[in-house]
Length: 295
Ligand SMILES: NC(=O)c1ccc[n+]([C@@H]2O[C@H](COP(=O)([O-])OP(=O)(O)OC[C@H]3O[C@@H](n4cnc5c(N)ncnc54)[C@H](O)[C@@H]3O)[C@@H](O)[C@H]2O)c1
Image (cartoon, rainbow, N blue to C red; front, side, top):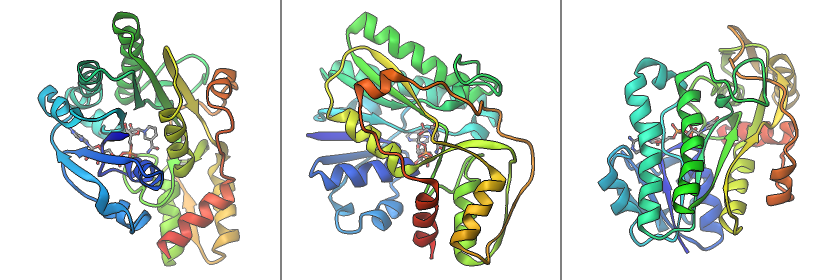
């Protein structure tokens, strides 16, 4: 099986590709720039097996030619909350039009399904059950979910959009919610660091998200689905205390407003039914692995 992973130079893509390569799959990475540094750090023995294509996800032709000859796609290319706030039109081109380009190319190639990254950013601050985003980023992700449903109804192409909350792990160094990962890096290096938000948020270990994509890739399903991956809802003060258990000399604190995303989410039995047994790495273990990576 040859799988196209868009956003291949990014954080989540490196974790996903590491798993696909370990299964012996052919992997093609697509991004505006080729950057295999994180993948090399995570999977040094297999990183060179990846075939790279550079191009712009908002250009239909680039996406169609990248997908040509692939059997599946995991669409992770995108820009995060701060970039969407700074330039909403560019954010929409990349996050929304880019996703439509992936669906169109997948239909043209005769693929059965598209796996893509939505986000828990589809929820506003108060309600983790009914999407009501308060950011452009969340609004574009929610629009992608609506279009995924339309593609199922119009073309019969199935999809799963995972909605992770804050993904943490080695290599998560940009975006408004990179604080927990940057705290691990600072703790490993003995540097002071202030997580730029307070309150509680859901922390999901990167490898758990990668495992969810891997499982979805090997599962045959119908319909257009969006599944929240909320992780462990953790107050930043508890995160800091846990980090101190791992690195007693860590000098980490937190300041600023809480993230504008809900902190309580109903269980979704549909996810457990469709993809049973997804892993959930305990927070202390995920933090320990992240600190160890930076050490
Ligand atoms: N990291 C998280 O906590 C988190 C949470 C929820 C959802 N997501 C979603 O998961 C996906 C991956 O996130 P990430 O954390 O790996 O982000 P990232 O910024 O590390 O990776 C995104 C990649 O997309 C690429 N990209 C940007 N614009 C592009 C364009 N025009 N054409 C082609 N490639 C382009 C970037 O170069 C980058 O390598 C994104 O869609 C993001 O919205 C991430």
